[in-house]
Every structure is written in structure tokens, then in C-alpha cells.
Length: 366
Length: 262
Image 1 (cartoon, rainbow over the protein chains, first blue to last red):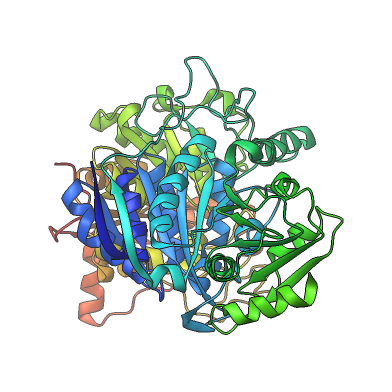
Image 2: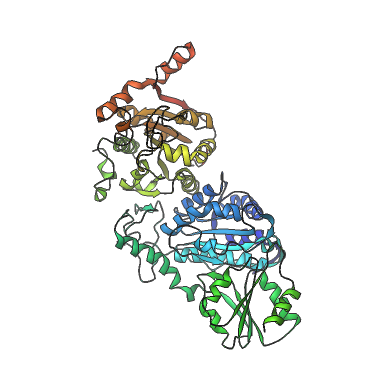
């Protein structure tokens, strides 16, 4: 049995986290993400979990990583300025292979920008925001239902790949209210345990080491320094660094097909919209209002690692159109993977593209 | 060596310079752990960045060597998620009082049940001897080549003011007293802060007329004054000799604490 609810996106995100077994939330209030913290503050104590309002976002992500190392599913939620503050420790989580979930309810930036208006301006920051080479996973919900579903999925992927995983929401899906189906149980697999006799950062073929959380008797040393399979610092040997960092990237990039999550509409189309997050809702509106099999839609529910093979689902594509709530970010990723023209349809300021705007773009480029 | 069972011998050689006080502090901490009979399966060590923060890497237990200044925030997550674990944090004056100052006062305020050992050598040692928030006025460092002009933080007094349940200060000379203070801190529910004034001959002493290792230890010994006497001098309005600092137990109290094992 599942239950039907009418709720806000941020609340659905919190419910998704709880359903996935999240039992630790460390956060700092910031518009437009605050309802996630408020929901977790109300709900976590009732399920034996811990909510803590930390002194800033640096501390929030730090506490989340600390909790994650006890084997507790842990999450934080923030927006632009707080997300920027978290960057160093996000790199630490990537380097130490800490499974955790970071929700960014995006708002207009840079700087304090537009606290109450939507944007998709942090799409590259979630991929490249911390220093050095690493890979992460980022999901992009377009509805209140997906705020629930993709938060659950984020915990699953974080555990599966031992990587900080992002729910890249925005003010629109965060504050929108819609019908949500909440299942009684969700599918989520805990991280594979560290095998007997295996070293704590020794990985098998999939590049993901087994996990021995604190208190499990394995005496694991965790460091953000370049470390060997034993977890010990080895900061000068080029081979150790190359092996470690290459594995951190490869374990994600080589699993792109396993991780990918997208929806294809009208695969025979010649003109193809590529979207993620709320702009997909406008494209769906246009396609409902003007049925036309020559117009297709690739909707990405997950943008990092970028599933470039999804673009091949449209063998007749002549042109790709990409509406985004930024001045053109993910469009660069599409452009570098196809030979056809890729047209950016940027919009900033907080409003979603209108159907009329997308129709005009469609007529101009088909 | 004290507590050989807790030492990762395969990590030798360690990074500490000849004459460094950090090894003494590490030894005293492990002696306290042994005295209390803690086991490695129920104990986690957390640290930030700097010479002090390399200590957990030499201890055979679960250990989290984190980012600069954030050790207490990481440790808060560990302890609140698993109150049954004993959490010990190693930090230094740069890590704790400069980049991590905000986390320090809030961890004291929350009174999270953990023991924090701060190796205060009054200098950024690992990066080669730059002035820190505890570098004394007038002291020479690579970033205060004409003598530091800034007043220094009193870390122990800061912890008292911010609400820690247990605060003590000793030096790397006072190994018995220090070990006892760390053990008492570990047994006190809430946030226990033990400041250890320790020597950095390489990057502090060398530039401040304390070139010989024994000179630095002798300086710590001769400038440490028991807190009872120190406070009495202050109350009487008598002059406290320059460079003198208080040692001993500054506070032990029972404010409400977080993350205490049930």
C-alpha cells in the first residue's frame, strides 16, 4: 500500500530522505531550502534520528560526513551561498569516499542574488566546485513526486558508489505543491561491507571499496590527503595519487549507463528538446498543446555523470534545443557530444520559460 | 613507549621534528585512554589540519583526519550519530582558534560529549612558522618578522566562557598532570577541553631565542603558574610576570550536555 499526499517539494524531499533511511541531518537555514531542514527537525526525532542546526554550512556538511562515517545515512540541504561554503568538504567527501546526500535548492546567483527565485545556475559547481579531479552524481527533479523519488535514489547511489550525491533542485520544485504518491517501502541497498582481509580503500573491479564504518572494529584511518589502499597518507608518490584519483573518477564515469536516468519522448523526432528540472514541464506543456512527432524530448533526471549516449536515442535529430534557467551551462556538455547544432535557450531572473517562448524557439530553429 | 597496543607502528617514521612536543601529548592521551580501559572498537579519533592533527594517523583505531579547522564539526556528527563511541579530537592553535574558531565556541556551547586536546605551540608549524592567533605579542614568525603586534587568544579561558564542562591547561613538561587532566576530561560528560602548551623548537623556538630544545621546555616549566596562585595574584592586583600563564583545572561543571551515552 502506498499513500497519496498533497505536499510541497521541499517536504517531499525530506520524506524521501526519511523513507531512504536518512537518520542524520545537519544544516543551516537558507532560502529556498529551509523547509527541508524544518521538516527534518520535526520528523527525525520521531524515528530515532538526529537533527542538528550547525553554526554554518561548512559545519553542516562536516557533521554530515562525520555521521556518515558511523554508518548512518546522512544529508544536508542548502542553496547557492551555502553550497559555495560546502565546496571544500564536498571534495573531502569525494576523496574519502563518504556516502552522503547534499540537496541544493537552487536560487538566483551569483552571491546573495535572488533568494526567493528559481535558477539552475549551480550545475557545473556541483560537478567541478571543489578543487582537484573527482566525479560526483547529480539528480534533477522536475516535480514534487521526483523530489521524493530522486532523493531516495540519491541515497541509493551515494551508498552504491560511496560518493557525495547531489539533488539539484531549485526554488520551483522546492516550493511547488503537487500530489505525491508515497510508497510504504523503498528499494535501497546499503554499501557493500569491507570484506574480511581487504584493505579499507582497496577496490574491486567496480572501483568501489567495501565500507567499514566507525565502531565496526576495522580501525580505519580516513584522510583527505592522498592515501594508499590502507588509508595511510602517501602524498609524494605520483603513482599513489594517480591510482587513487583516477579510481575516484573512473568508478563513477565507467558506470554511466548503470547510473543514467532519463526519459525519451518521440525518438524519431528531428527537433529535440533536451531538459532537466522544471524547464521540462514547459516542454511537456508545449508538446501536449501542439502534438507533433517531429518534436522530441530528452528529459534528464540525472545530469552527472553526463549520459552522452542518451543523445543517440534520437537518430534523426537535426537540432537540439536546450532551455535552462541559466545562461547556458549543461548545453556545453550536449554540444561536446553531438555534431548537430545545439541551441541554448537561456533564461534567468526566476521565471520559467513560457510555452510561447519555447514555441518561438522551436519555429526559429526547426 | 606508553600504550604500544594503540600505536600504528607501520606508520613509522613519523613526521614530527626532533624535540617536538606533540609526541608527548599523544603519549599522555593514550595513557589516559589505557587508564580508562577504552577499547579501539568504541573509540574514534578526529582531527583537522596541521602538525597536531597528524596524531590520529599514528593511533590504531578508527580515525578521521579532516579539513582545516573543521574537526569539531566532523566530531559533532560522529558523536551525535553514535553516542556510544568515545570521541577524542586532536587540534592545534591555528586549526582551532583561527580557521576553526567559530566551530570551537559552538562546540563548547553545545557541550557535545567529547574530549578535545589542543596542542598549542603558538605557531603554524606545518607550513613553516607563521604567526597564529596564539602567537605572543612581540614574537617573531615568518609573517611577523618585526614581532607580532596582535594580542593572543587565551584558548582555555575562551572554552570556559563558551560553556565547556571541563577545561584544563597544562604543558608538555607536565606529563603526569596532563595525563590526569585528559583522563578527567574523558570522564566528564560534555565538552572537555585540554589546552597543552607545547614546544615547537623548529619553527617557534629557533626564531625566538629558544633555539635549544631544553630551553623551550624550561620556558614552559618556568612560566606555568598554578591557576589558584595565578588567580590570587590577579585578585590582589599584583603583577603577573610577563609570559606567565595559568595551568591546572580551570573549570569542571555540569551544564546540560549533548551526545552523552545513555
